[in-house]
Image: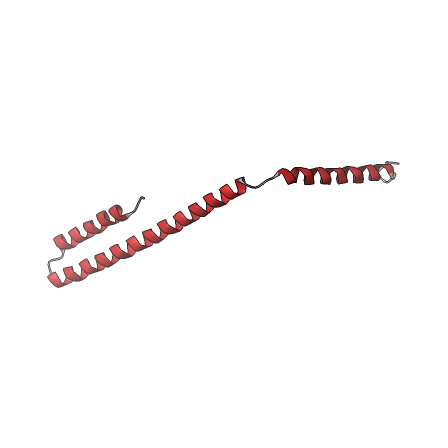
Length: 103
């Protein structure tokens, strides 16, 4: 499965390299490196949660789609026929009652 870990590591390792190159004070460099490591853990966690959520939604959509494909729609044809017959009867009654005629 695809993960964002490689991209996150590339960016965060670049930050660490800049810290090692630019910051000369070892204490400040240590603090900044710990901050970058915390960012790395946070970013990986957020990406994993997003990936898990997207995977769950995708599975549920697929499951619901497959279940809807199993539905027997043959009853809808009969219901449609009944409704159309009722509409036809109402139209016949309306047109024969004289209220639909122009004067």
